[in-house]
Image 1: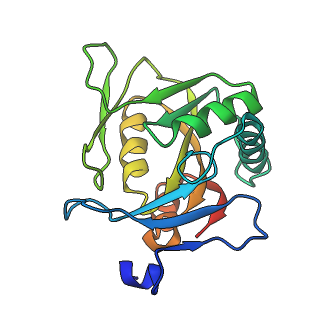
Image 2 (image 1 turned 90 degrees about the vertical axis):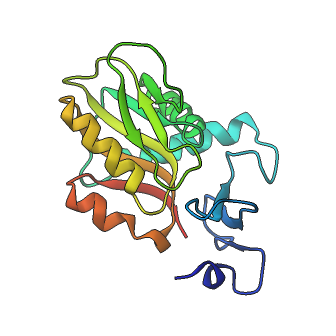
Length: 196
């Protein structure tokens, strides 16, 4: 599917109104060729409207509930969110599930137990996790997934560090990128609130 197919004469496409979690595709302007020219905007990012704290809590509760009811549910010891879009969903799920979290950052810091992975479609492609996570069961949380390449890279790096990735919880699955088969090939279940 091309970018033109996504927009079909309009500036954005919206999830049907009857869905609980709203998201849209919006064209990004001035991006280099290797960068995705579509951005998913949604209820928690504060781009289209203000975000009330109750929305954050409701969304975190809905995503945690969806993961808890997933057929391949495994209780995590820790949540791992991705800079920058995954920060708010991670905090929301942490509050709902009463779980600790860590964040992967696009900051290369002089700290021990640093792991580097790639976000291939981004302007700044290097992302880092910090801390000794060996033996930990981790649920990765992000705002959206399109191709799954970033999360596949992260899964590989975590597994090399003896981390058990229990699953991935995302607010939105952009099905144009076909991420689900990639994650299934890695044996990692995907749980989302909305599919575009």
